[in-house]
Length: 390
Image 1 (spheres, rainbow, N blue to C red):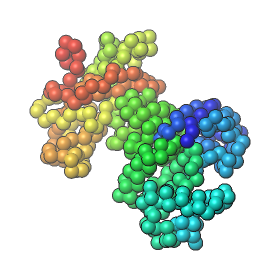
Image 2: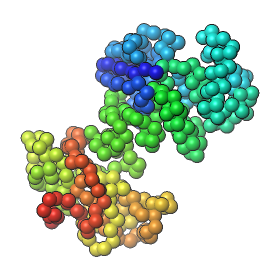
Image 3: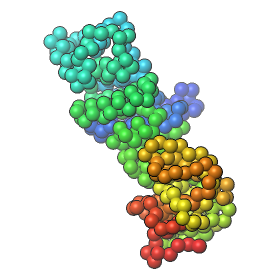
Image 4: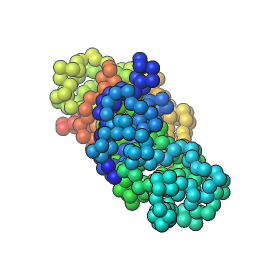
């Protein structure tokens, strides 16, 4: 296997508008790196540049210690798994997996050994004599993955391989890919638009938008410390709740924020980094995730609202409510609690559960999150003296 190093990569089709701009990315040897973002963000284009299906406009791509800018795909030591399987319909599973090795000039014994080894790993050894039309979608995808494995590439590239599968098969195949990565200790670059796939598969997630990398890091880093509003709302399901407000007080590692409607709340942020940047009266966006809000029906007036819709998931429910100031909010509640549409509800959250974003959408660095579920009524501030802002 090998590491991947991308420096100042740029791609433009018309010489004017950059599809990719200033892409800098390192993928370590054996790392599972997921490129994620909305349609049109440039993630599939980056994958095609990596494998040599398109020429770069500027910058450098290195696989291992070798710069591959001008190498054809066959000489890059990569194997790609496509969204559409791309199996030859007239060939058996065995012949589909053998095709690339035959073209490369491998001898018959080597081909046979590698095919049976890969088929055993993927549990498709009993399917080697079947044609693609005799296979399920999940089985076809495993054949496509097996065809990549037999080549023993330096780098695996996956282009949305699960998007053609139904929900149950998608979960099953996702688990199989995760197990495969551990077995092979393979370097993988994986493209998806599904942030759940990204969170569950990736050692490193690269969030892209408009041809640029918004943030890269481990799944928990992106979830707990998003660097901007785009990452905050893209990572996490349901998306983060956002509320507009103004800064009313700046204290040591603590901001007071007045929300629309007059509600004042507190948030733990590193104010040593805010000094000189954030001022009293500045507009901010306050974010809080659905699972970090406590459903509390004991009469607190902190966040009061009315329930509009309840989605029952069994172990949990999603409560869609409108606060008194007209703000819509989503709460992940206990599935054992009965919540009725139209009833009044009171909510609370710990001050270290909040994310704060400045007027440009950039995040203020948070104090390390601790227990984000409040045990007090109302809005717990978690301050040293135990004060709760009025």
